[in-house]
Length: 397
Length: 150
Ligand SMILES: [Zn+2]
Image (cartoon, rainbow over all chains, first blue to last red; front, side, top):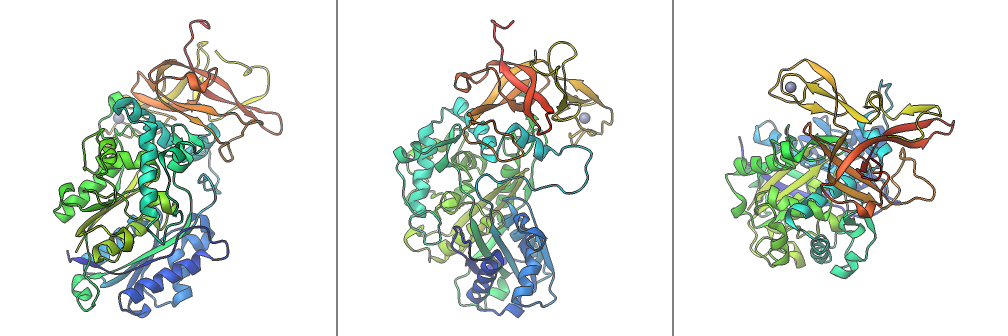
């Protein structure tokens, strides 16, 4: 296995861009990452892209679409869809190509324009004998945040978490996001303002659930030896894991209708997330105590509370105290989502895992501006995908 | 045990997912005879990775369970959900059954704000919505066990 470097990154501001295509957004971040690395488009030896289900046939083959726009060179192009964890899966594939010594320069890219509101089901056009489960949960009326609300309700009953804790996550991430020029939402919120926002899926309120956005991000990976030619401060991708769920996990998984009961569970809640984090620790030889800051998947405030435990940063039920004590704020011992998180960016499923890695790269280069985590040398990111998809990265200087 | 399911033309929201023949509604899943894992909706396979059981039989779940969790949906979900007009917030529960499985379903016959974690729940079969050509689509729902009704 060879060491892998992040040689260049590109990020489009996130928001709603009705007059700009996802192809244009993707092309811009591709060019940006290549220029950031001091390379040319023709230097790229392979590309892995998020396979964007909202974009029709050309969206499903986003990598080929981008190559056609920027110049076809005959390189291997793979398109991957692992739901909201697609960005992590894309990066993992690119990482493996370099670590295995097959290629020296690989572009990982995600570009996405999301539908408004709750993510809808993707239509099934083949002839099937039965109604697929993804349709059934919609007949029941359970959108994605409803699944998260079911878990949060349990957390409140088990650990005594409160609605104020949910609001505090948003307050913290809105402060971080206000410092980030790439974020879609830059307004800071008070606890009172968050608690006054409309209830969506009790106990989750509007401001405690991330929006759906248009966004694009790219990460250009090279071998460490190749990157040594560059004058940019070296950031290494020390680990990039990929995981799926484990039998016996009591998480009610989107879009399923059942799970093992909590009493009979033989695997942890969010087993795939725990596995992804542990895999990243094993790959890097590092542990939670070594991490200077975290970009975790704050798809909702519940996620942030849960992931701090799942990633091994505290014991079950202790996340709320870390939040209350300011440990997870910028300036604290373990800043969480210094970018502002998905709370400030919104979800763009193909790109959000890469967004986290772009932010971590800037932080480790020391170029994150007002939101810089002082002295950051080791960063961890983790992204959550529907149907038990997960990927975690550890970056080092 | 159920209301408005016998008089009109009706269709099950999913085939073979519930029965009412005993007079009390029960969900139907499948059970692996080797490791006793239950699945819902029913499966052709055993999802336990260390079990090579191939004897998967249809299995009725208990009529009653406990409310493991619930959420109140405050906005109309997108299609194919058929929202009543006017829309009223409704609850979805996760009900834990003695067979070791928790299953989600809409809550009925209750004020969503009166639900409490762990309360005793029973399974019922009720209409979900009516199609444009007048077919009543029926499915499982959950409601708190009430002494008054028994
Ligand atoms: Zn079995």
